[in-house]
Picture 1 (cartoon, rainbow, N blue to C red):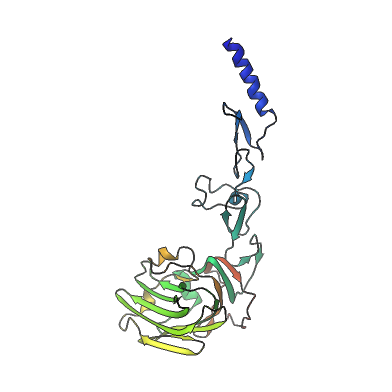
Picture 2 (spheres, rainbow, N blue to C red):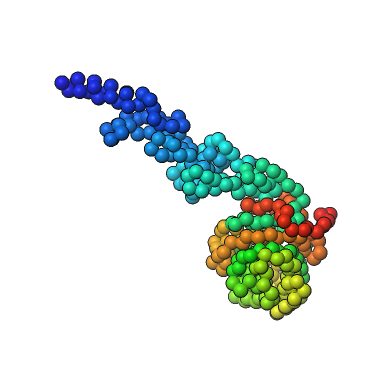
Length: 302
């Protein structure tokens, strides 16, 4: 009798999986559940019948912290292109965060000689310490300038620091929408700001920097200056990587000095009147698009 029951059970199990309700080439495995089977899904799919796709695995390499149970090196079908990062939005959608130099829904379009760019939420541009000197002639009397369009407040725009963030230069927007320039040299701090709101979605021209022992910032012709932090020790020689736009890890690399990421347009970056070639090999970044919404001045990249 036991042998007969076992035979019927085997036949039932075969019948349960004969039509294979598992989708997307999922494997049907008979069991003693109410349905009589379970589905073992192919990588990139989930659900009782493997009916739902996991979007990053239908794109490119998925960040391990987003889907920790998935092999981060697994590749599937639709692709984020040119080294872009796939970001999952629940289980049915994804977006591509493009490397600098590429744009488009799948980061399929390249662009060159970028003078103006739109930094999307969490995006940034980075110049590594070893490359800064080849792109920019920075001294202790350096003047930076750029044009800005944003509606953000209480957010970081520019960060230049050593690895411990104990020495840095920063440009940021206050909660009231005004912009400020701050320096820190170990225990010494200094800052200056201009009472002009820049978080109004209008194009503003910003200058900031140092001249000897003074630091300054200018917004649309309104100028402020204060005594700098380091009359004896030039701050520039201690600084390493430079980040524009904040990025999603802003809280970490600024040692909790800043928390909110930047979103907006930054155009026409120059140092001492010389345009910075933001498409040079020493420049990297994520989630940055060329800015087509605002007039960009012609500049030389000699």
